[in-house]
Length: 161
Image (cartoon, rainbow, N blue to C red; front, side, top):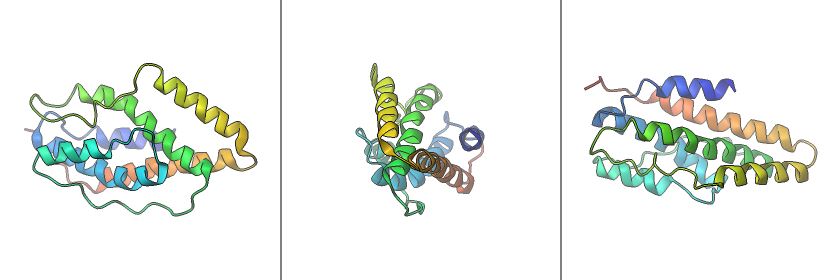
């Protein structure tokens, strides 16, 4: 998915092994996540963990970016897809966080079988969703990726070190 690749490319420039780079990364994620989680309503929100990590770095949760208001169940499931999928990437990124830096947010990975259970729930919701549900879900996922991309693009990245 093009939106996903753009997000990955933008966030690849953040140095997670330095306090400044990692704070910038978490701040950018905070701008997107604080808009997405209230709309998506995940079973296990990570926003409190992100706020905790930012506080440990002497920062506060930033203001959320605006999220498109049109919300249906398909759209919400698309947001959830992007958020739950980001847990998979978080597991990889958590290993890049510098020694001694907080990493609760990135370490909040799926428990055994949780990703598969989410995929099954998504498939079930899609089967029951009716006409237009899938397109709404795709639009939700694209909106989530676009929000993360906007947050990453606006965040000033400190020099490595």
